[in-house]
Length: 341
Image (cartoon, rainbow, N blue to C red; front, side, top):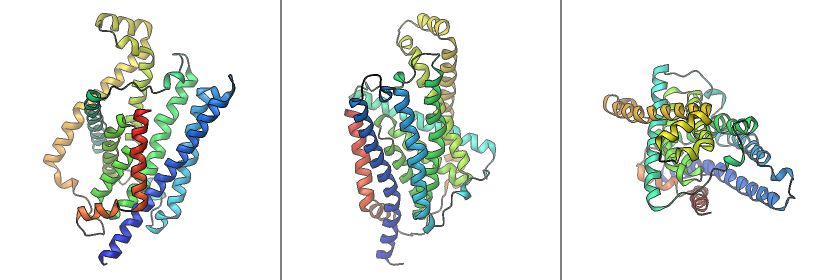
């Protein structure tokens, strides 16, 4: 295959990935604008003024309509061309439970640690005053409906549908470029796709490790479970802070302990357990990764793909595809706009 033909094949792969990203970004942007318009123009007491309704509508549209539609488009285009079926990914892991648990710890621990470090660095220059908006969804410890509505998209829908979209679709389509190349590009796409600067580093590295898990296990289930555990821990911490955030801000440690376990006992126990498990991952994950790099470096040798060309040229050609240029510029702009709005 000559250079011109190779470049054409690479750009075809690149454009097919970026087309899906652009469709997602365009539809969600238009949907968000329409939803905000309806909220502003609706009368007081209207169902459009109900945060639970709009939250449910948003995530039903994203996870149950939009992403399945994108998966269908992929299966009929790039998936069909590369003979990539979704049926083949739902199989038993080719690795042991111990191996899988080790990489769960590496994925969550390293990505969370790097996310914390990056946010500390960003915090030196920019004060973060953003609100998650979840406090308007969950109004009290007895608001079971609000908690369930927050839990389902965060801890259940996101791990399932995002893994199908990124690892089972975009990553597998990019594997022909070489698995390490696909790991990095898919991870970067996953990080920017969140359009949130505070999540970018964590999501990028988490996305990369999830790709490695998929390569080694040949099963999407392990990726989904890892993603679920990560999101569940974050869900429990964010949920707990809605009720005990003001208490935790106190400088009086005795007051903090007393207030937490007398006023919000159940929530405080959940918060402490989630923090403890996260800290264990943050300590163990980097250590396990270092051991892996020292003792078993050969196991991280991945397939080089079918295009036997230099990495710099491969990268330049991939990111010169028109739709990819548009997708990455748009994701970066949306991240910046989200930061300053």
